[in-house]
Each structure stands twice: as C-alpha cells, then as structure tokens.
Amino acid sequence: MSEAGIDARIVLTTASNDEEARSLARTLVEERLAACATLVPAVESIYRWQGKVETATETLLLLKTTATQVPALKSRLLDLHSYETPEVLALPVESGSDGYLAWMRDNLLRA
Image 1: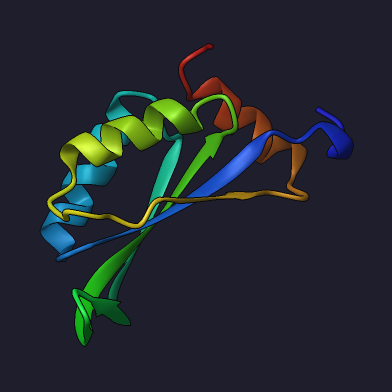
Image 2: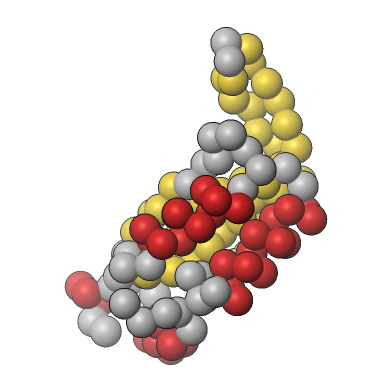
C-alpha cells in the first residue's frame, strides 16, 4: 500500500489495571479486531468526572488496526470495558514500514 493510501489506525484506550488491559488486549487480538496491542502500565490520568477533578493510575492500550476495523473494535471495546465512559480515540497513521503494515492487514478480519 502506498504512503498516500495508508488505512492504519492507532486506537487509544485506558483500563483500570494491568489485568483488565491484558484481558481487553487479548480478546481484541484473538478476535482479529486489533493486529497488536501494546500495554503501557502505570500511566497517571487527571480528568474531570461528575464535577470533580480526579486522579487515577491506569494502563494505556495502543491498539493497532485499520480504518475499516475501527467501528467493530470500538463496539466490542465498549461492550467489554468496565468503565462507564471509556476513552476510545482512533488516530490516523501517516506513515509506516511496508512490512509492518502488510503484517497488520494480514492479522485482521477481512471487511
């Protein structure tokens, strides 16, 4: 795929702990909604929730997928997640190695 036609996406979400993050990641990869999930433990989040500023230690997930998979991944993530309002942000990938992008596509469901 040419650089101009990259459909890769990185979906960001956080989980309450490593165990939940690992479970979400494994399920999404097993179901071929994400080709890879990278877990970044012990990130600190500061946010406003129900009128108060909160602080929490969470695990960040970086989910590698394609634009066509984002709707299904988002839907499944919302079903599985323990949070009432989980973060689900899909970011476009502007560039990537041809080999990695091909591997990614090969490890996702075909739309």
